[in-house]
Length: 351
Ligand SMILES: [Mg+2]
Image 1 (cartoon, rainbow, N blue to C red):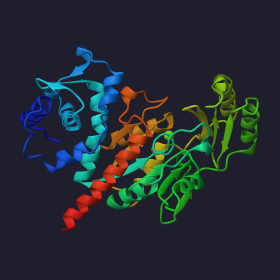
Image 2 (cartoon, rainbow, N blue to C red):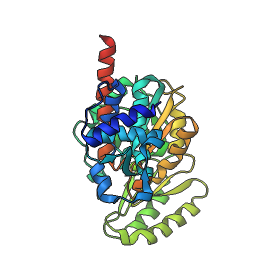
Image 3 (cartoon, helix red, strand yellow):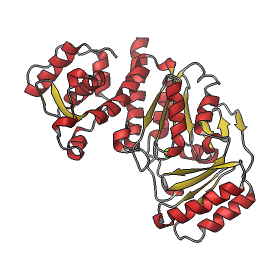
Image 4 (cartoon, rainbow, N blue to C red):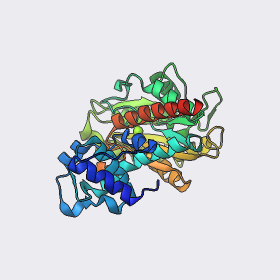
C-alpha cells in the first residue's frame, strides 16, 4: 500500500478538528475502514496515554493506514498530525487490515489457512463444550468462493470434529496437526499410524488422577485438557514428558493453551500447510495463516518464509501486543467483512 503523506495529513486534520471531510476517498479507503481491527476504546482503556509509547502517524506507513481507520471511527483524538496509540499494537492490528486489503486487490493470489479452536471458535472449559457462532460456516464458504477454493482449516481436531462444527459444509482440512489431510472433493490421506493403545492407557491413567482433566482421543494423536484443573499442569507435564520419552521418536509433546498434546513426531501444521500448498487451488499462492497457539508457531514461520503473512490471535499463548486479533470474535468479523467485500467487488466487476 503506498500512502502519500500529504493525503493522510489532510484526512487526520479534518477528523481531529471536526473540519470538512476529504472530498474524494478512494474505494480502498472505505474498504480499510470496514475492518475495525483497531479497537480504539479498548486501546485507550488498556494503554493509558504515554507520550514515549505513542506513534506519529505521519512517520509510519502502517501507522498512516491505522490512522485512517481510526479517524474514520471518530473515537480517537488526533491533533497536529499525531495520534495517541501505542505504535507496536497499532502496527500489528493494522496488519490484519492490510492483509485483507492485499487479498481484496488480488484474491486469487492468496490462500488462507485457518486454525479452529481459539481462532475461529472461542475457547471453552472443555473441548466438547465449544460453541460455533451462527453464520461462521457460511461466511467461510463465501470467502472460499471468492478465493476460488483456496481456504483450508488446519487444526488439532479430528476430521469428524471439523466437519461437525462446520456442518453441512466441508472444507479442505488438515486434521490432528496434519496427521490427516482432506480435500473438500473427498480425497484424503492419513500420514500417521493410529496412536499406540499403550500410550493412550498411560495418558488416561495419568490424567485420571485429577478431577476436571479431560482426555481428547483422536486417531493419531491425543490431547489432555486441564483448563478446569490448572493445579494439575505441572504433574501432567512431567507425566506426558515421560510418556513421550518412552515412545522413542514417534511422538512429540506440544504444550498449548491449557492443553498438552501428543502428536506424531512427523506431523505439524507447518507440514500440513506445505502439503496442501502443493495441491490445486493452493499451489502458487501466497499463504496466509491465522492461529492462536504453540502448535501454530511453525506454520506462522513457514508462511512468512514463503512470502505470505501470519496473523496471531491473542490468548494465553500470544500476548495482545504480539497479536493482530484480540480474540476469535475479531477473526470472525474479519472473515465476514472480507467475504462480503470480495463478493461486492466481484459483483461490481461483473456489472
Ligand atoms: Mg488453536
